[in-house]
Length: 226
Image (cartoon, rainbow, N blue to C red):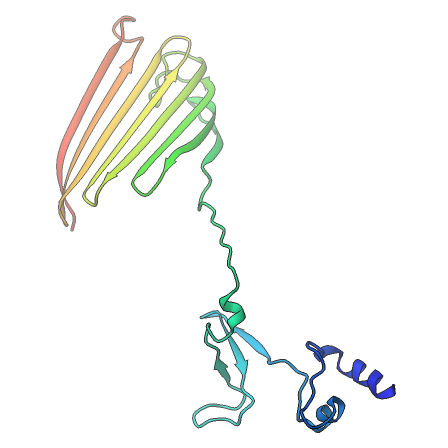
């Protein structure tokens, strides 16, 4: 009884499995003689490769210091092979945002969200309300007062050589509505040469004496990258 109690107290930190027995002698005698060990192998985690290593109990080999670690192959443990792994994925960034704007020309609150996001196509939408302080600044409306704003940003990549970018901005107030749309298209001809075209349209419903006025401009350029 006393021997069993002593083994239970002394072996608490290392009792991780049923009491082993040697083929030719009782368990207590085998443990006392050192023929059977209750201790499980000791492992340590190596950060660079995230591999589990086992402390070597054999004498030091030539070229290796005592206490070095032996690598354990990932397939050495059959329990790890049958273990199911569940992976979770989360987008790198949020798909919506909210911000306030306080400037000399306007005060506004805007909510935006990303409607489409994939490697080749992207579309962002923003909606907001505010108050226009200075007319016409930053493509704004023609008078002071409450305003509603909205914008659309769309980009599309065509293979490895072509890229389309379109932005539409609308602001409406008590006096008029201002619309600005820009379209850009880039085409890579060869690794260092590319063709860039831009088109911009601006429409003011209060222009031309209240009948509305539209201005357009475009450009075409050949670019060389050094």
